[in-house]
Image 1 (spheres, rainbow, N blue to C red):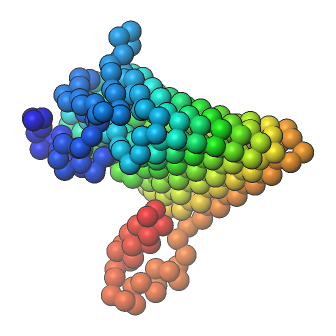
Image 2: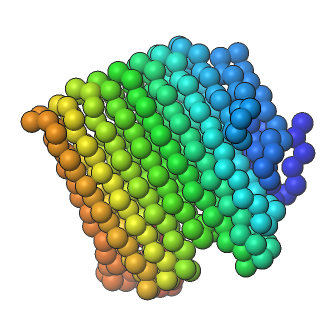
Image 3: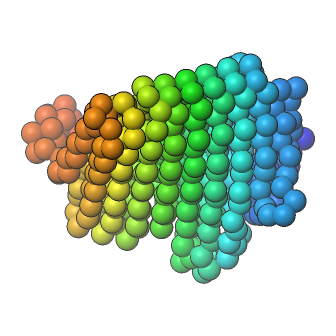
Length: 308
């Protein structure tokens, strides 16, 4: 049985919705060390030998199983770089839950950089959930820099839920995907920054196979003096369809830069981008205030609904 203190338990609830040790395959990392690991009959987790990180092998045909690989950090001043590779067998259907929570109560910056690479076999389906969260009253920053690479074979499907709602001071999120024939990628990003936080999200999607498709959508809120940049590029190299969208709310002195990019290299590549940045409509706030909410409560209600 894992021994976790209350801060570790709280972080795991926030980033992986874990209230107990998960069933099935998992690896829980705390303060640069694995504190619990378990494989299953169909999913094998092994540590890398040359660098810090894991290899996760999922057998072909594996259905309705999950892998949890959350990271928590509670020591001020830690900095780590982790490489995790996932090999998802043909015709499998699995959920992979990652995420990192940092509680920094000290004066030094704490940073977790994670490189996740996914090799998705033919006709396999993957749902990937990555949540980031920061807390602690120290002056040291909470820094998270995730890098994600996705390589999809014919007919595969990947759904990615990328969430950062609170407490992360700096983040540079880099995502690259390469899709084969008939492969499908769906990305839903939800992001909120406040105080003087900075968040950069970069997506680069290559639609290389006939009939491949990608739908990359980001919803974000920038509050106080925070800054966000959303840079999404879809490259159509075959008959394909791609859509990228940034929908953002700006508040206080926040700043948002949306950079949608499309590149069509095939006559039958159909690519669309949309971007909208604006403040909360006054009539929305007034309507909720007539129901008994304060102005601050009305704003929070609107933001919660927008990011849900």
